Figure: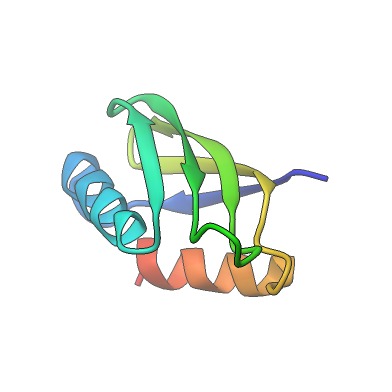
Length: 88
């Protein structure tokens, strides 16, 4: 079951998206898309830490829909991690 998360971007959206891409790449998640919308997928193979979803940026708001999450994490943990990084 997919979950939707909406966050306000305090920084320039282009800068924040670059930061998200760089941090995600460190754990094997690849982003495809542009400053308006795109998708992401990946993780560390064989660990069950795979994730997949889409994102959309409108103004200073980013909407993230995750349809596959790492099984080790609850949705609440996923939301807390996203919030801490995106809004932090």
